Length: 376
Image 1 (cartoon, rainbow, N blue to C red):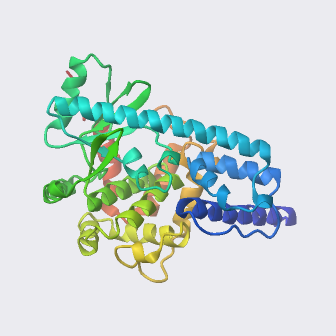
Image 2 (cartoon, one colour):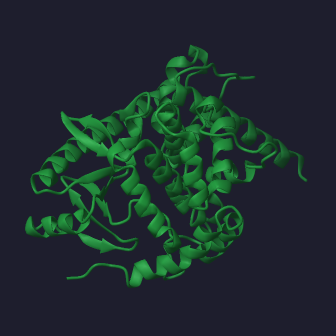
Image 3 (cartoon, rainbow, N blue to C red):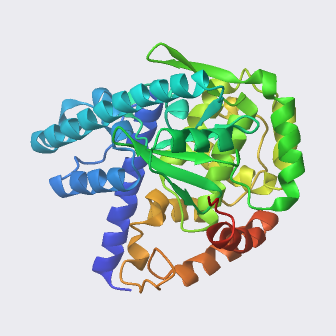
């Protein structure tokens, strides 16, 4: 192999290692950056680009206050980064306002939404306003989804029913999604058990306060299940970035003392994802710095998870900018380049770790896309 190419690979691996150092410092608010030599302007531009691709530029930015002056990015990039983080903060402030406004409006009409992911998870971060939230996700208690859909029609708010048993719309410039299903499981074989879980944990819901309004969240065990199966769902399809893994790490860290660890392990086992959860846990501990003590149960020794971290690293935010496929062809019925190839590769990767989910994906996705939408 060409010597220059080997040097290029080595440089990339070194920079990747530094990137994860910065991420851990920003995520946990501690630690020092270890460098053999200062990063070049080109190095910092790559760090910035990868941070954006994984939508964690706020977390990397949070590491800067722990760096020595000589380790910081060039002033021009630092300013550009600060402007971007200011935009993130402003967007999150607006999202919190919209969430509070919607909860108030829905509650007044006897509708009981539950906030999923996004700002609900951001509350567990060191600096909540630095977590990027793409949109607002709501699921609902009992028949709340149908009631909320009727509410939107009455208020003449334009929405569209989408694949995945959901609908979406914009409210004051913020994108919002309503979901019939609380969890992103594809296999219909789990439907009965998931209903039992929701009933069992009905009185263990958590709350956060946004703009003076108490916002309902799932119980800690179910929030972990919801966030983690969302990661798996996207890994089985086109991939997912580091932001969602950071969500999982911060949730485990913040809710460790509140969760029933044995019950959580049983939930993962009964939903058929425990083997995959072990892979996730290893990455959270060994690559993202989650203290092992905050895991609900140990993962097996000698578990090989580097391949999954590589998939996360290359795919980035929902696989939209995966450099491995940027020159691939985009078939008419698919949204991303080389879609059939990517879906088949991911099926083979994950079928032995979560077989029901991998097998059910193409069937349920097709059904939800063409037959599972609501219509008036």
